Length: 349
Image (cartoon, rainbow, N blue to C red; front, top):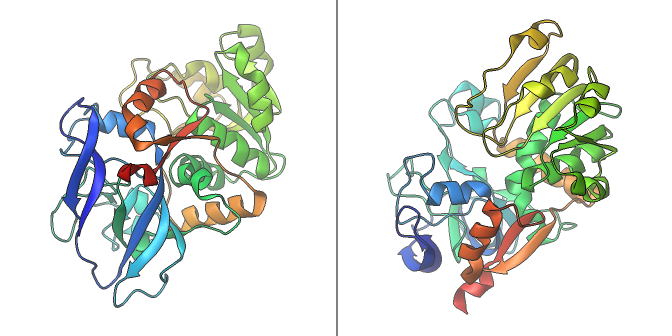
């Protein structure tokens, strides 16, 4: 089936209209008419080949929301007309220990990503959600609760689950003391989700002007991380800190703010940092610095159901697909509150 999309033809190239052929449905597949697709900072990194290994032409998009329009002969979980989503993965080995635990994001053979990857069954490139339709195994499709707005739900499939997974793994509950570093696409979701879980939530920021918005999003307190007095005042406080900053930065100032057995979890920056971690405050507080990436399909559905129950959406700015290149420029400057979402109907305009 030939469909319309927006794609990058090469490294650091502007995205433009492109037609390609989606595969025919396999027996366990779901075909989805894409309605909205969130724009993740990693889309820009992949288009620019910042991490290496980019495959062109590239159709980005892994925050995919739509309506089921066809199902394979052996599909049992979904039917035509269902509201569904597809996140960062479309397949995994399904046989390793992490996959067996429902943690497909840690597949020992590496999951098949929604775009910029090769289909593990036929070796063809995967193409993402900046497109009219997508075809995915039903195992990697999630149901969107009726209570959720489709556009506002799109970023939950990456920004939402990326922050939800560590909140759940480190057992955040009413009374937990949670810090969030950075107020962007990931950070604003971390504030909302931690608050809804009953935590006492603090935002760490370098920008004094973000306090009002942080409190609107659920922060109980805001700490200016460049102010030594403010940082000293929150020493030994946090059970969990989620670090959402997407670029290299020094994490050492935050470690002493962890309580005994506290953890600072990196979810934003991918790569080697320039500043080594000081082990002294780690050792003397049994603290840890850890990492986390997206989430499994089961916990993604759990997160969506939780958001449906609590009325949690991402704060979004809806754009036409023809505005994506300008949106990338704005996103690089953090000029969005807090996530762009593409209205895919604009593809045919």
